[in-house]
Amino acid sequence: ANEGRRAMGSTEPPAGRTQLSLSASHETDRKSRPNNPIILSLTRYTLSIVLSHLSDRDGLSALLTNSLWAKRVLPVFRLSSGSYRFVAVPAQDPTSLLARLNSRRLRKRLSLIRRNGDGHIDGTKGEEGAYWRDLSTDELADLEWRDSVERGGSYREHVINGERTNESQIRRWPAHLELLRFPSRVKTRPVCVLASYPRSGNTLLRTLMERITGIATGSDTRPDRTLSKALAMKHDMVGEGVVNPVSGQTGQILREAAQLQPTELLGNGESEFSKLPFMVKTHYPERRGSLPYRAHSCILLVRNPFDALDSYWNLCLTNTHTQTVCDSVYLRYRHMYEDFGRSEMETWCRFHYWWENACSRENVPLLVVRYEDLVLHTDREMTRIMQFLLGAKVISDSYWGRRINHALGLDELAKRNQSTSTDHLGSYRPRTGGNRLASIGKSIKKGRYSDETLRCMHGIAKKIQHFENNKFDSPQSESDTDIADHEKQDESLLNRFGYHIYSQGFPK
Image (cartoon, rainbow, N blue to C red; front, side, top):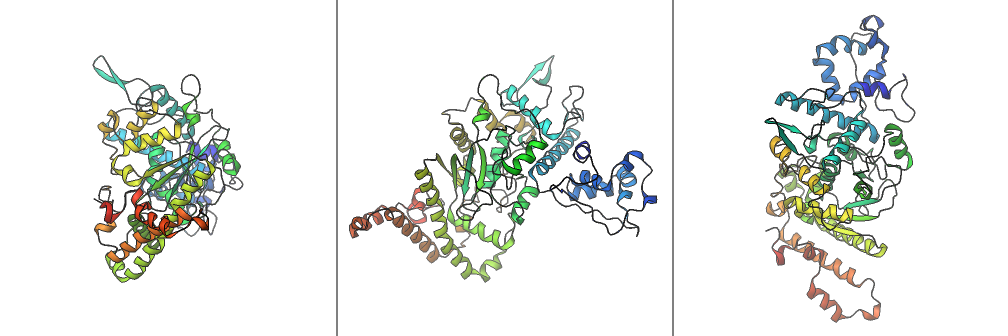
């Protein structure tokens, strides 16, 4: 409520930043409004802001189930006809989405405290409460991450007079309850582009990065698209449409909303935070992004094409990230499904070749990460990624090494709360129901593709590899012997990434 009043000091919405509105055909009946000076001083729009900050569902729930709200707040939304109408328009700007996400995490902290019966609701007396009073979520995130830096990134405790106590007055929370923030440094931060063919695990990797670094990741997709809005409002990916949080119109919004000192200093000297790039997801060149930006490094996330195309098929048909069509749909449209697989196999190959060639041509550092390795060996792969981003050789005993352990549920706090499972680290559960081991090669195990289609897809990968090997050669250098040598080598992407069914036995 304090954030709502602070953000909405006037009765009119700020120009260009309408977060929600109340839709009513008549003015509110003044006689039906509560006789409370504080409530009366708040306009209907301001109350809508406060309620919708909880989201439409939670705002309506509070109005209907909380007796205090039902008596004092609900009458504000009463129409002259006697009915009530409250319409929440979801926020689109990243600042509001981030504040809403952090507010939900504070509420989950309260639930955890009440369930466990430990700590006060706030930290005004130095107790291990859910939050400190009179601070915005941006200020809380800044304060907690400063404390995390001082602790060295891990949860440590010691015993005083036989009682366990933390080394700080600020309570340490499981990674999924920690507050996020956008980079607050005004200086432009380098960008690491997270390139992946659709349905290759970029949301999983983004969630892991956010839990480790506490910094929200970005995306070059248009934030007003249905799937982008679903990621932002249902799956906690609040950086949709953000490619550089400290430049342009988005950067201006963020700087106005959070005029804080940067959290960049880790003790003395240059900060490791200042070296950490801002990660931006892209599917280019499979599709064009909404905004241009300059990338300083690239992580190419690769998933076996059989599962990636199968998941992409479900996404196209359901227009969701989590729903799956039933088997009868596969049978009814089997010819379309297999034509889709053959067609997109070429796109899958050309996508990965494009990024390898572009990074080589522009001298951009490139790290290739397999989705299957990320799922089965998460700690090892996240260590590789952080080493790549920081330009460090070893981080296992450093601040970031301890942050990785905390984010993956490998430290004492996460184990005690049993809040993190390596099968459910993403912001949403996979279509396999959470078993990521079973998700590897599931389309092959279920017989989604005929043997003819699988062999055709392998042939396409081999053909594209032959083209890539020879497209820069002069016509005189092309000969039947050269072609035969390439065919014998069979250095297709399926072989290089370990996805060849016939020569490598994938997915075994």
